[in-house]
Image (cartoon, rainbow, N blue to C red):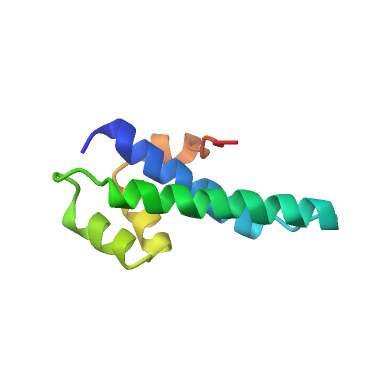
Length: 93
């Protein structure tokens, strides 16, 4: 599995969790947040269905079982401490 693919999955999960944790500031913001969260969930599903054959078995298991916290932790564990400290999910919207 390429580093780019790992990065795409890690970013999609990171954005998804960020959206889930951010408190909406208005009803309009809540609707936009829900729409964006739905898009991220679809993206994670798409990336899961397109996992390359050489994807780690544990990552495949976590994603297929929708254990997204564990999948993100698995991907973060693949990073150096410096990379982890500097990582911020690339926002796809």
